Length: 237
Image (cartoon, rainbow, N blue to C red; front, top):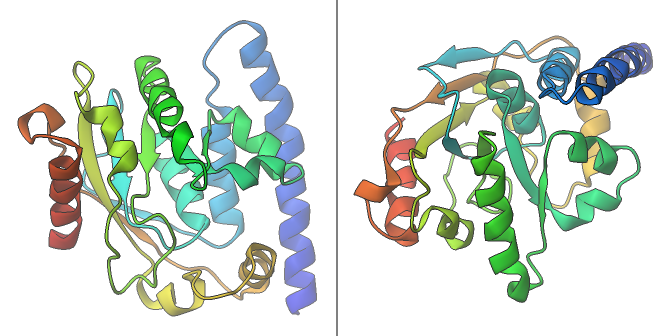
């Protein structure tokens, strides 16, 4: 049954992809902002079994979402709920198909090994925000177990110091509920193994996305203060 479930989900993913790509291309051909990356990623979340619940109101414009991080599934959930772009490891760009798909959703690739590139990465975040495209940051810098919130890194928060006009920060807590132990990606497990394990998993799961009240980063202070405030609000959730 695991093999049949895997095959069925892979077939559904392929069907979703070949349907969404031409539609996305048509929107881009006429110079319109395409809704299809968001629609596609939200559908992928459902295909892998997610039945998300939204608590609070996601901000739609001029926003940086700051979220805890449990798995690659977080990206599907947040993209489906908000249409956000993401900051991802530079290595992801080289993954066949996945790297290319990331570029369709305005992904900002960063290299943690190249500290000299941080200034350019901050500029990319600000440029994306200037196009009225929400951006999500995972300041833990890695995936956690869903129980303990890891320390936050403040480097990319420099994109908000000074804050661009009218930009708000909205903290988000993602909670996989009873499925957290099965779905959180921790330890030495490879991405491929984790993905196959999720695709073979029986049944659905009900993640909750808790959206806190947004705040104006200009009222908080420098990047470290903004980072600390976002973490405090996620802990409060």
